Length: 379
Ligand SMILES: Cc1cc2nc3c(=O)[nH]c(=O)nc-3n(C[C@H](O)[C@H](O)[C@H](O)COP(=O)(O)OP(=O)(O)OC[C@H]3O[C@@H](n4cnc5c(N)ncnc54)[C@H](O)[C@@H]3O)c2cc1C
Image: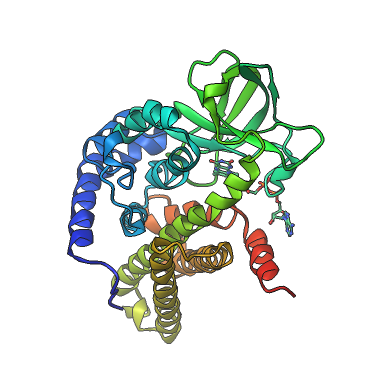
């Protein structure tokens, strides 16, 4: 189905981003998968070409492109090449905006240029071993010591956990108020800030997902983002954009999985005919084609609503819920239609299947999305 919300400049941006991926990412994907982490140098290259935080103001080195369609294009192209480790969306559309939105002038001037150049890689650390969905249950604390805070606690499952130079860490700031938390900019090399192992995962093999530890880390007050008790609100406020980002990637991932399956069933033969000719295959593919098209139209509309600051958390949750569940269905049917070859890592559908599973879990599980949507229905 033809999409109607992209204009010439978006198509040119897509061509440039795709050319960058073909040259700087695709040839390294296997090596990154083996290493469990992408090469730092690719971040610099992306920065040089203007692909990091293109929305940021020009005074910091951005292009001032305040149009989420550019973020959408990057999510889509990364999904099309099935690259889960080089998380530009996490850096650009999730973490960077915290600094632009809640940072003061000094913090923006100090951090944004390096972030935009790809020299300072970002991560956000909310989840803890005993608190994921229930963020208010986190135990990491930040105690006010006058000119600095002292951070203690640990985080788990942190994307870019090993590569990150600057981590936005959520920590409790008032023992009497479970929703009082601050967001702290913890920098590589701060004494007491340590990283655990690169966690072994079902998929996303090229992504460095790690544990982080904070043992009496002295964080200067200049590294607190916004209000010391406002962090919970900041996180909730930013999660709508994060979920839209997930939706953009999920629907593109579903499209890629569908295409890979279509290509395969046309080639593969059983009982003297291509398996594409069996009615079961055609009906499955027809269902998926329809669902992916519907999901794409909805996601594109969310992007345009977001551009006009009209996307509500409930609708962002609908987008994440629908597209990530659909992705799960498409990769599963895709593996089925590939038969045993679909279970082999060398086939893209196998990696897509493994990479897709987390989409229904991170950035809020499907169950949490349903909570958010139903809360908005005032039942
Ligand atoms: C690969 C990967 C990357 C990640 N990256 C990051 C990152 O960069 N930064 C970060 O902070 N976190 C990150 N996470 C953490 C992720 O966001 C959490 O795993 C997720 O929010 C779920 O939290 P949990 O794992 O503690 O599960 P739990 O909260 O323990 O949930 C377990 C189950 O209980 C269900 N459940 C919980 N509460 C309810 C409820 N109220 N109603 C119904 N069901 C409920 C859940 O839906 C789920 O099915 C990442 C995780 C992974 C695996």
